[in-house]
Amino acid sequence: MNTKINNNLNITEGTSRLPNLQYSSPSVVSEKDEYMNNYLNKSLEIWNNGFVSKSSKKKALDYLRSAYYQCTKMIRDDLLSVPMESRQSKEWREKYWSIPDFHYWRKKHSLLFSSYSEIVKEIENLVELRKAMKETEVTPSQKIVSKEQIVRYEIEQSIHDLMIKRKTKYLEGVKLADQFGLDVSVTSHLVTNQYGTQFVRCFYYLFGKMTALNTIIAVAQKHKENQGGK
Image (tube, rainbow, N blue to C red; front, side):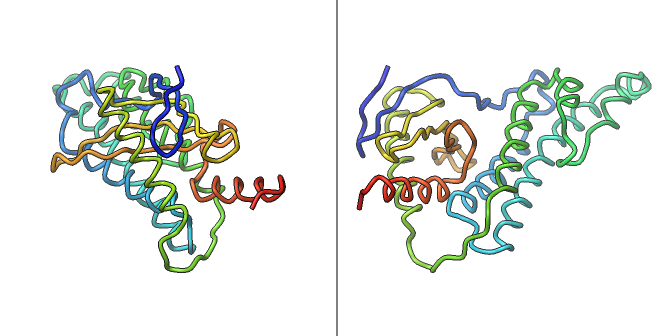
């Protein structure tokens, strides 16, 4: 069902592809998932505002790598929580020694660690995000409040207000065609940090592909110009 919210955004509420980190084993539930969220948020902040230098792109990827490390550390810690005699099994050894570096994660690893389904979903999202970041070009800009920051604030504030009203933590496939004039959508996850502050984490998609917000704005502006808009 399409719902009208402020800033003239038409959205469709659904279920999110992003997981709420809840694991089957109590031993992996700790502050490390908060660290993961913190690294991911920092990475997304840089990416959505645009890579203004090679160092900013590297910093975003480094934060993403740290988020991945926290995910895999949760798996390792859980594997190490079993008695010593259980660590001699072939299955245990295969899992423990098969956790790859971030850029080597493949579908076979998702299958191998399928018992950690929620962590694997988060890792797969990080892998997709890494690919999108690697493909994003560096575009130097002036140090002013950017159009990207303004648009992002308007969108995320609107989605946050709707989430609170609907009492939901997830929205998937939020349509932003009215905002951009293109096939743009956003998947949102309402996050609460260790201080109790709530904020919205958003992943933007252009024609179904995860894309940085500043890139979407640039494409939309070019499209508008080609259509004879101002």
